Image (cartoon, rainbow over all chains, first blue to last red):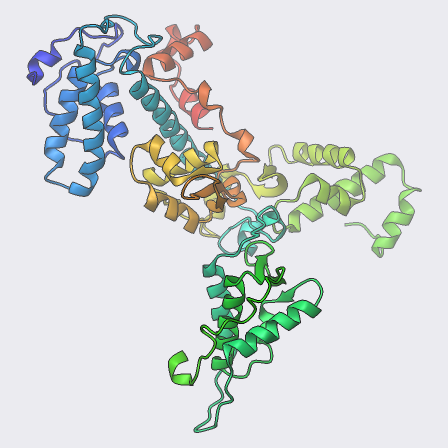
Length: 290
Length: 223
C-alpha cells in the first residue's frame, strides 16, 4: 500500500484549488458520515478533487485509513463501508491492468473507465444530498407559516379525508384486519358475570353464517357489521377466525376504501365441494380463546 | 361589513349588481372561505363553493393574492390547493401564540425523503442503492411522520413495498406538487461545476463580490 505522503504528492487536479492543500494523511476530526458514499464525497470535496477524475489510489488509501479508525467503533456500520472499500480496491486493481489505457486527463466520457460507475453513483448521491439540504431549508421556512388547517388538525397534517382518495387499498393486510379486530374487541365489554354458561360457537357455524350473508347481501358486508350481534369476546373471536378461514379458502375477500376507511367483505366464487373442511372447525371453550 | 340578509339575497341580487360590486362580493366570499378552510382547497372546490367557473375563481385568487401583498398573510398554493397562511417573516410572532412544530428529521431521513420524492414510487432496496447504506430506520421514521406512505407493492421478485410522498410532505415543505422540486440534472455534479455554473450565470458578480453582501446567493439556493 502506498504511504499517504506519496499519495498526497499527486499534483492538484483542479487548478483552482487555492486553500488548504495540506493533507495530513490522517484526518483529525471527522464529521459523522451517512455512509460510504458520504465519506467518499467528503474526501473528494475536502481536497477539491475532480469528481470525474478521482485519483483512486489516494482516495482508497484515505478511505481505508478512515475505516481503520472506524472498525473500533461500530462493526454494523463498518460492514457497509467495507463493501465500498472492496469496490474501491477492485477499481484500483482494474486501473492497474496494462491493457486498460490509464486516463491521465479528463476521463469522464471514457467508456472503459473502471471508475465510471462509482462516479455516477457519487454524483447521483451528491445531488440528493444537496436537495435534502434545500428541503430542510424549505421546511424551516414553512414551519413558520401558520394556517388554520394546521391548527384544527392538531398535529398539522394536511391529510383530510378527500386527499387520500387515491390511496385505495384493495388488499387489506392482515395487520389492518387485526387493528380493526382490536377496535371491535374494545367496543364489547364482557358482561360482569360470574358463572353464566356461555353459548358455544364453532368456526364452522360462523363460516356458514358469514357465507350465507355474503350470498344474500348485495354489495358485500361491513366488517364491523359481522360483530354487531356478538355478545361475548369468544363469539367475536370465533367469528373473526371464521372470516380468516373464509379468506384462506378464497371464498371471501376484504377491501378497504382508503386509509382508515371502512373494511368490507365480498364473496368470491365458491370452489366446488371444498366448502367446509373439517379442519380448524372446533374451537371449544373460552379457555383456549382467552 | 355588508347589510346583506340571507345568502339567497346575494345570488338573486347578483344580477342587479354592477360588475365591480359583483366582483367585490366574490372576492370577499373567497376571502371568507379561505379564512375558514381547514385544509388547502383545490381550484375546483373553490369554484364550486363560489359558484364561479374555474377561470373566474383563478382570477379571484390572483386578485386576493395581490391584495395581500405587503400584509401579514398570504394566499399560498400548497399540496395542489390554496390556503391563507401567515407569512414566514412574521412567523416568530405567531410562534408566541402557537408553538410551531419542531423540525427534527435527521440527515439520513432527509436524504431518504429526497430520494423518495424524486424516485417515487420507489422500493427500499432502490433507496439503499442510491444512499449506499441500510435505510430501514429513516424510511420507518418518514412513514411514522406521514411524510411517506406505503403505496402498494412492486411487481418484482419479493414483491417489495413501494413508497410515495404524502400530501403532508408537500404541505410541510411548502410545495404545491412534486413538480415544484428542482430538476435533479440542474444540480451541478461537483463544486467545480457549481462554480462554473455560477460564473456563467452572473459574470458581472465576480469583480464586485467584495462589496456585495454574500447573502443573496445562498438565499436563492435555499428559497
